[in-house]
Length: 150
Image (cartoon, rainbow, N blue to C red; front, side, top):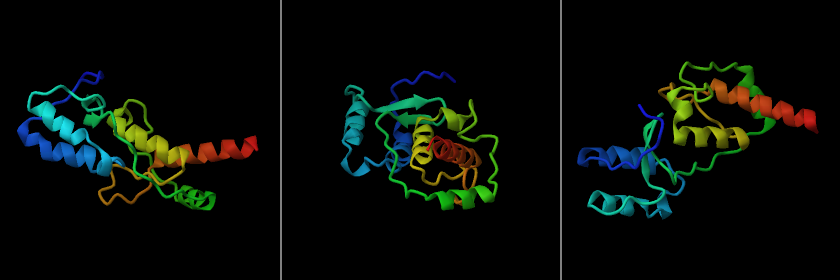
């Protein structure tokens, strides 16, 4: 698979999955005109700037994707999560070269969750509840660096 992102025009049977995966997860969903522009693209129009592209990690992605708001965690909550020693899975977004680390959406979500900090869950957890070990390590390291600098 190429790592270069190319404009993506879904086939008729791919639209529902693409909208669910790309649009329903985006903070811009309620105010985004990109879906209409992608429909025009499907019907022969120009590919819209900021539109859907191939993605080496997720298959497809949207260049206009924005992470949904997260609840900011307090240092005590982060320490409590870290005390559970969450595992870092083989496909972790924090591991360079994994599909998750190459996915535009996942990278944006991960970066936001580390900077805020807000909870980022392991993508291998079918219930979507287990904290990501790579995220936890990154947040703790960032928190310790900030504490040392102050």
